[in-house]
Length: 121
View: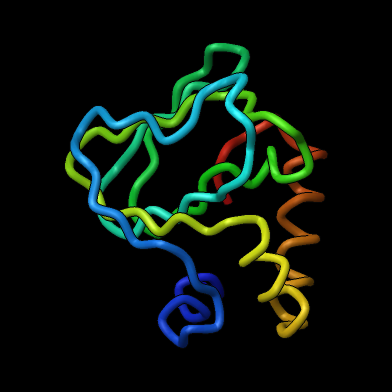
């Protein structure tokens, strides 16, 4: 996966955090400043329509809300997890330097706008 490779190569950086089970990563109304890459563990996503999804490690959370001021759903860890917090500024810097990431992001945002709203890639 492109994101995993960019993170491993240091081309996409952020703050690595270990969080406990039950940690809320984001919820509706919270100002959207960060994307969350789930390095280890799992999380549940509750969409604005109430739909629930279980997400595993290797997933980028919050991408559909990238262009919004606030998050529209909720992400809660199901077990102790390792999460890389990627600010919008850090993502913007990586986008300026990496054409493959720009294309990937356009594809993901396009997919999210044409399919049922999801919170992961």
